[in-house]
Image (tube, rainbow, N blue to C red; front, side, top):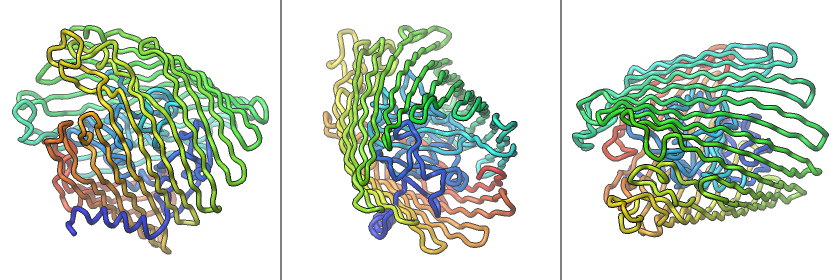
Length: 623
């Protein structure tokens, strides 16, 4: 057996040997934080009752990971692949179940973020230091969240807390002259008033983002580092029992270097800003409501050898959600409106067709969650009416049956869509204003087992997409597009088997996952670019006294860098080692050795990745 297939084989062996739900826990025990899921149904649900396939990443998982970025952390999860043009701070994409970066919705504390020009989140500007928890829900969720939730939804929950007002702090340093510092305070300042304030800075000299093979118009041997500053705050006032008002804010600024030739120190500055005010009330024993107004901005400035540009996306949203309990069941009614606006200037000249353009989407949704004895079921329906691309209605149904207290089987079907981006609609010489949304139909079945410290999940899915927007040749474009355009011409099938597991043998915890998938462009009969047929993880952690020692393996099969499947990205496997030690109550020291075997691999052709590197740090307060 070749070394490239060892992590894959081990992951399969672990999954077969014992049951686990990797979605529900990656730690020795399933704690309170990971025993509930919010994103799957837009309400707090016990993890054992959630019908949608999901992964929960806890605060302890984040601290132990020693990850350099959110993208690095997500790479360790099942059902997720990543690409990146260099190290942390550079342009990145996250693929859920083979879907593109634009085919998932990203939320921060319930506020939708992302770029309306390129589609999807700007991952480099999301500060990992501010995150307490991440929920990843797989599959079509447009019937709850609207446009773009074709592959799933990723929701980030920032650090917050209750109880006595307490400080939190973390600091660390590592290879490539990496430094990280975070400080915050959280808790109650009065019987009915709680707050959290967190500030962080991280920076690294990095390494050259590109390789010589990238060519003279890209390659630059200089180091490409980054500086990421961030702040978040939250204030909640409990007016009376069952009624509260609150506000939250997040701001981050990532100043990063990248390569666009050797003639200039190319830089990009990306900013992420969210602000929300909300109110929650429980009007009767059975009826509660939530109202939120939020503003989000994704701002990007580029100063490169090919010129300067500033592209900003602004989103204003208003959401009103009502939950009505009927016995053990919940009826949910949602009304939302969201306005997108893009400001785009290149070379000091406003971008024709894009700058100042707005679109508004008004949405109404209803869902019902049913629970009776061994039966679980849910159904949802949503209509999104856009001022630009018209009306789209999506729906989903799911059913689960408990064969025993530990074993459950699931089946579901759902539809979803992705809105065309501003570039696909209006970019001069490429966008076509009549482009339509992409659409998809997904069916899946799953088996879930949970008993004590042992859990298992196995899900088979098939997501068939139509009207995919791709870069088409001039023959498929309207008159006047001599060099091609964005056009709804392709179909794709995203199918696969996703298995996750964790168990505990005394002081040894073992966890693993494997994804066997076939992300296929049906029109061209090719595999979708930068997707592997197999990828998986395997990890073991031994606990003794106040210490933990761990080892992790990450495996990915080969991929193609291009849609024509002519440029191969080789398979890779990574080995990571870590140790933690609780030196005092609430104080933990972490040491991590990433890519311990110093593997040279690529996530994008002719772009570098980190070699063998170490990180050491100390955490006080939050884990």
